[in-house]
Length: 212
Image: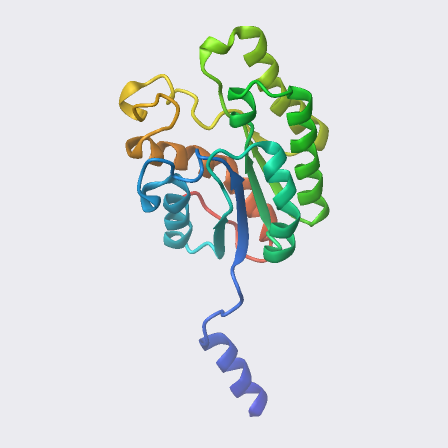
């Protein structure tokens, strides 16, 4: 009788297991620069996770102006503190805008990917685009960094966070670099499509996840 009661309680009581962590390490594009925080794509992504019943909590460790070197230096502490199931890396834009070494940028991103994988996390690498005035040779080499890293580490890649957005004036802030609030749901949707396969891999105990 006691065993039956315990079984019934397990079936009735809600699942109180802690939510898995999605750690986002990015720059101003992920830090809701120039718009209210709740309107940024990261907050909108958390809303979609909650609405769909996905047991994930986002920790947004993005800092406006961050370079890959700065982010790499602070990543180990974030991994140790949060033990994420998924790490999303959206970095490199500030390296490119400052004309920093692409070799160092690649090395920094490689170190971050390796650290996240060693910590047992799934990794989504998100590329960014530079303004056309930086010239085709530099911008092509810049984009190539993300593609090479994705192949080397066999991780998921979203080639561009703002492809098709950065060229639309009505979707951009006055600086021409940062997407405005209208663009954030579009970015959220783009991230969602790239992230969903990783959620399926990271939580095999749940029934098959369906797209929302």
